[in-house]
View 1 (tube, rainbow over the protein chains, first blue to last red):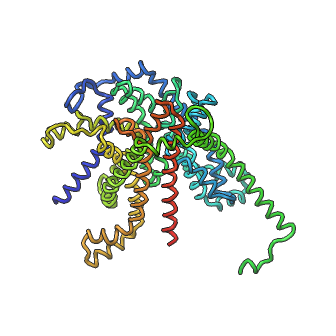
View 2: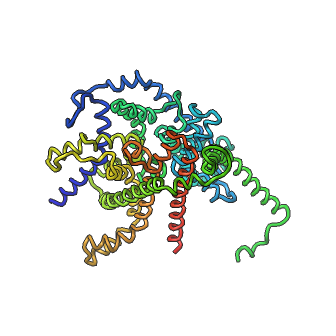
View 3: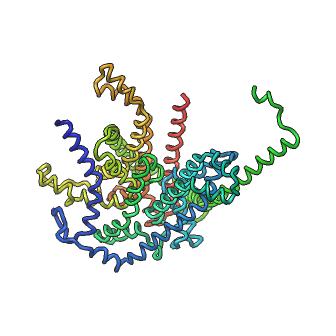
Length: 266
Length: 295
């Protein structure tokens, strides 16, 4: 009996260990007059969100972030889809080298190549543009998208494609009626990962952003630097939303272990 | 044997096979082309540029190893490297100590198991910056941890956790232990429960079953999880940027040298060293994994 209670207590401690930092961000974002050793803020307020909207153009920052993330997602899919299809379905020479070259960006720390990206993008006027920052994020999103897509394409039963062809599908309707439905879950997963990788990215963005292209993570950092802890927390709260939705959605569908490769802190 | 039983295709048939193979290679090449060109332009070229810049003096032209000497030959530079490695190592070991019992416990089915798995994914799914911000607030001198400990009279004065080495290690553990826990969980999932039952039937205590049966089987995933955590800690940026105070591990140091001191050649040399260490670890680990598989 006591052993069971001890276990429950440990699990509770673990749950608090994990969640309390986020609870603090929420308290800071929705509370005011939280001083000294008080456990809770004296008042609840939306003031910090309003303040953020007025002083740091929160709406613009949100739109920037979403625009960049959408650009990065579309561009990632555009180049990762054909490559993954070729890797999964074609016998190519030097395939291990090819895969190694595609995955290498995930093997070194972000800051290592962010330096060079900043230098080159600055030289060709891609810094402080949504396209440029989106492209920088593709470096993060493309390798993992290829991994997801290749495993999805490899899992397709070629006999289904043959059956479709035998039953009189032309190449186009074969693609529309057989290939696409089979590949769709993989494509959706790759798109979600790409979006999130871009939306959440801080290190690369910090190296290539400019005054017109501030994103939510960068604005969080800037507000902290200016000493506005509550404003930074309010921005962080908005920043958190897609990750939490993603996590809730994914946990319904798949095992957590399979998500591992795509998530990368920094 | 079976190959010899059929005559090799010749003449027109052979030409057709060669043509089909060629077409496969050409189309495959064309399909991978956009991605490879993009990575060459946006990743490999900047990386080469950084390597080149690390070999040039800050002012003037020509080639020099001065930037590497300035980093690896100075007390300050070696201190940064040692701090980075020490933080990563300590956080990795602590994370494994936390992950193993958790992974063992999460094997059973109980109410709230799914919720716990969800919680475990939190630190690695949310932006690292938000996690770092929350940690700094929580472990502040007036944060909940200190307030509760003071109210319970566990401590007499608030603990200093933010901006200390111990605090950084703790924050790294919070942020990166799930990588280890998830790898260990999937490793445990592949173990045949019959092995444990056999051990228990033969009269072994739970601890002996753990030591003699589970631990040897799970050793591979402990290593894999450990390496994963170590790499994440080594490359950490947001946590030390917000919570490091005077302690600047490699990632933050590179950022400071480049963006504050604008000494790009020096920052490049540090970045190259950091990249080589991380890539070397990944490759060495993959090699070791392959060797284990073959033996």
